[in-house]
Length: 259
Ligand SMILES: NC(=O)c1ccc[n+]([C@@H]2O[C@H](COP(=O)([O-])OP(=O)(O)OC[C@H]3O[C@@H](n4cnc5c(N)ncnc54)[C@H](O)[C@@H]3O)[C@@H](O)[C@H]2O)c1
Image (tube, rainbow, N blue to C red; front, top):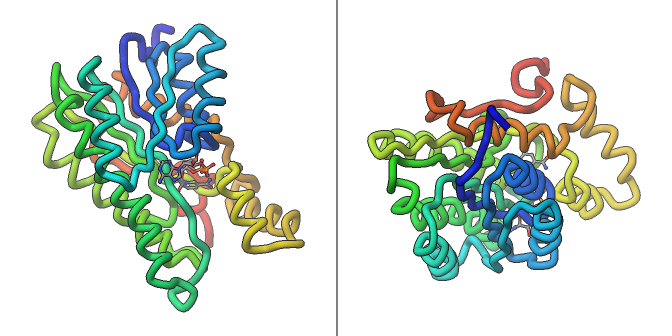
């Protein structure tokens, strides 16, 4: 554990009960970090915590809807009272499939509340602790949809564009406080998030859609949650101390090699 050690570091991972957030939580715990998972799905969060605790590492699950500022403040303030927060991973997010014709006001509000306001809520609450004792790292999970047009992702793209620009804004404003803020832009990653939207939006055509979505990555497959977790680990570790205000593509060539 000489490189990328998170020993004595405390990390908050939103949405750590499933998919990418789960892989980030278990990977960070494996590197010695103490993990706080904020998720509204306690079954998932508890399962991740149990997996981590079994290895002898430490993780705690907190029931939290990241779109609810009061709840986020209560939980993050309570954590910060006990220990310094070193790392914040804004991963919790929800999807929506549809062009603007298919996006109703309530869809737009729901996506905004979780994917944008959730990130705002968590950064705002964690900043005082992140800033203390020399600073910390914030990593936001953006998407390929942050920078390129994807069919039928109007509301989702809106939110992921905002995740990218919030990243730049935070990185600029808090660089003097020792805060690094970066984001990553995954292409399709095989998680329950992907399985969920395929089964919801393409019932009866699940296998066909899975193949189709796999092939939209020039590399010919979807990413794994572990691959996303490993990049997240690097960017959150001290080895990435010179990296801030950056957006890292992890997309099998989607953004630069399609076409
Ligand atoms: N899977 C992909 O292909 C892909 C690609 C690019 C970006 N992303 C982004 O990665 C992130 C994680 O995606 P995933 O595929 O692992 O999703 P997932 O659905 O498997 O997991 C998301 C987790 O977030 C939690 N969550 C959702 N809304 C929440 C809320 N309001 N408050 C607290 N927790 C909440 C869920 O309970 C779940 O545990 C999302 O931000 C997503 O937009 C995913």
